Image (cartoon, rainbow, N blue to C red):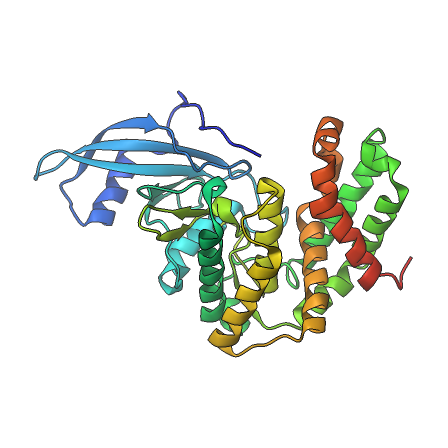
Length: 359
């Protein structure tokens, strides 16, 4: 899949000049800064499904003369799931209360609406598009994931004090399970012409997955929890020319088992880029070796295979089950092979291995 640069917009900015001025004064520590104009420019790393993102240049006056700042404004759309914290509130809360404890680099927050309706972030200078990544960049991303998981390993109780964090496997479990159940019913009842309904075995396996969602969650809860990014993949990682990584889009950050971030990283990489410059086996081995060194955790191969299956099942349940009814037949036709290879076949195989005891 390829992406084009976003078209420049003409609609009003989400923020006022006074709000941006206040944010810049606090960000820079310069009380004389005053924003006099905002000029839009395109940004190359905008990805689908991440809300509205616009790049801009703020032209300012100050006691030291003209100043210029390149930034990005993000307007998260909707909620992560009905019944859970809004995407905007979760991300702005992350920046306001937790970012200082994060061991990996994120763009600086300049200003934000208190409830997260919009956020202004410092524009990361320079980038390497994910489509241009080599095995080196993938390894760096895995090492960074190890660093994040190591920092919060086994600290679920401490993290629970941050009430805005998602807890998909326990406190928020029923929200995800119900969304998946309703989504599957919508597919069968309200979209009978979907090509997916012509595959009774697939539908049967998805029904089994939804029915046994509790077993999937219970299996994953046996693992020590850590802080999850929640949507970790190359599209949410910016690499500047010096090779420094910046991780963006923390609107789905959560408490849960580390393997969820790893499986999500690999599956979304396959989904968006199809052929990767490094094998899945190499990525998994690097992660497992990194975690063994960082927190002295070592998974037996058979245990890892079971956890991988349950993580894949949960990700599909949480991220795809309630969307199936909305996938047009045109997409199902053109992307059929990729859907089968990346999602349907692995998910059905995992259902057969782990949930076959229930019809």
